[in-house]
Image (cartoon, rainbow, N blue to C red):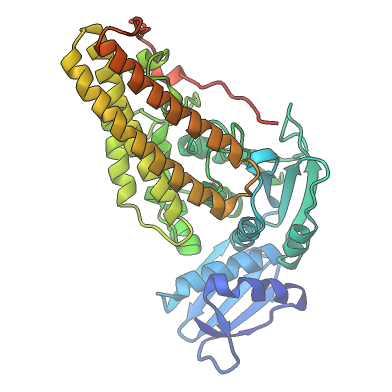
Length: 435
């Protein structure tokens, strides 16, 4: 969009120039639409009346947020006028950058730009001693963000934070716990600083791109007096051009509850099922009360139809394939168990055939994950996932060999699944923080 913008202070001009491409903005004095920005004490107010627009802002952060919102509305509206409150406190992002969680330079700059556009004014990075973030700190300074580096503390990662902390729940499973995030974000912060905390563990298996929804939600609860889920979804589309339905569907990887119910316990059945052994599926009885095959098949269909962007397309490709794999694994795991218990060699022949197909699908899933990892993280840390995928692939091959031997009576008896029922809501894969 071409605009003639007047009133941008020199201290914010560099930030505006850096974000112009994100906004699809061209500033030229000959543009038909005249936009005037001015600093005041009444928070953020944006308005447009045909070819005349105004932004009243209270700080550098609200100026960038105001420009993001104004330009988003102006794409389709000739007239609008609304106001946001003036937060007395700051809005920050706490980012885990230790070990495999470390973002590459391009992804970190992208995250800094995204945070600045949403109205964040500080970022605190927790990393290992000796890591150099001088370049990122300089880039953050250009965007008007306070950038601080602190040493990673395994015992209490968020201990340096002062104020209200909203975890983005990216550190337990293969996907974020969006329902639990919503419950936490609704807690009033009062006059305290508000922090969105992005933690990762277990090899940083939750992609960093999934933070987009959480960043939007925390920002809305910081800048708005009353926030409805529909408002966050609308702002998500306007300010980040992303579809809320697709991001919220990620919650269903670990949430088998009825629609609208959050996974409060933080269970992670997707991770349990993904890593569960074929011959010793010690947690399979925990899935006795749900139809995991159908659940993940329906989820795969949702993700296949999600609205994507250039940034999120690799994420949706990976998660779609993951949902398909989990659905098929649940089906084959049950079939394997039934065939063994019933001594049904005909059914076991079909199981072996399906396991061979799953081996190829596991390779495709690995490749999709690798492409996404390369987009956002450093190569350091990928060795963990290579080892895990490699172990899964080899174990699958060994299982096929063992089942073939069982078919001919050459293998020892398998260990069967416990018969006692479990409770999925409390199935939680142990969390180990990688060094």
